Amino acid sequence: MKFASVRLIAADIDAMVGFYELVTGQTADWLAPQFAEIVTAGATLAIGSTETVAAFAEGSAEPSANRTAILEFMVADVDAVFDRVKGKGELVHEPKLLPWGNRTFQVRDPEGSPVSVFTPFTEAAKARFQSR
Image (cartoon, rainbow, N blue to C red):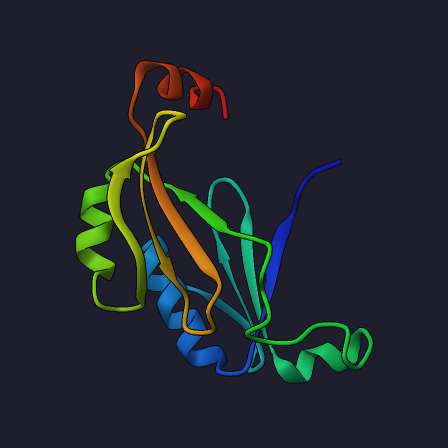
C-alpha cells in the first residue's frame, strides 16, 4: 500500500491553494477549476472545493471542520519558511524545539486547520528522518 494524499475540502479554494503554495514553495497543479494538487516528495496535498463533495456523498466532508488532524511539512530550514509565511495565517506558535527533537512552528490555514512546519534538529531526530 502507498499513502497517496490528504485531501482538504475548501470553501475558498483559491485562498487555500495560495496558502499551501506559500507554505510548500510548490505550484499547484489545477486538474479542474474545483480541484488542485500540490505534489511533494513525500505525499500529495489535494484541495477540493465544496462542490467536489457531491461526487462522494453530500455532507460527507465540510470545510473549516478539522478538529483532529495537523498537517505537517518537513523542510530544510524551518526559520526561512517561518519568515516567508509570517503574517499569512493565524500563528499558533513561533519556532521552538519540541521534546522529540524537531524545531517547529505552527499556523492555521485559511479555513482553520493547524499546519506544522518542522526541521529535524537534534541528532536523534535527524537520524529518525534520514531514511524517510
